[in-house]
Image 1 (cartoon, rainbow, N blue to C red):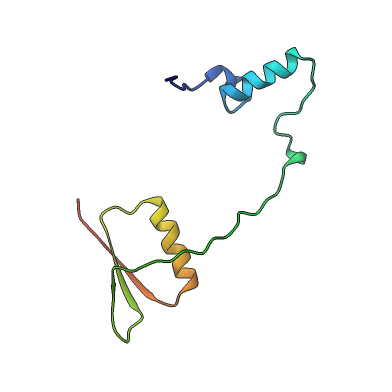
Image 2: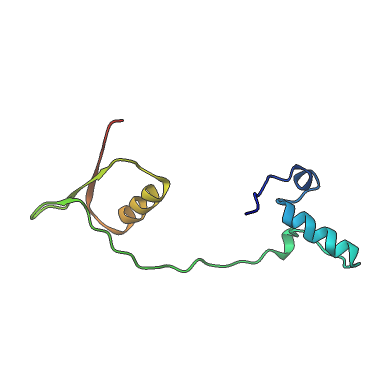
Length: 99
């Protein structure tokens, strides 16, 4: 299996990766002119929204309070809970485990 390495020469030449640098080299060898990441040719797009369901760890009868326990609070968890907070009128409490 090939090990991928950081290509410092490509970065020095203004590319983000060795693969981009190699592609540019092939285009130049073929006599094809190109523009690399031209700011006026950026393509706009929307990320499609997807519906998800979340099951809180603990809920209480007749209450809008929920408790979620977390051993680790990863970036994905933070994003999810911020989205939940936007959508719901709950009082969310996070309970973390001490290391």
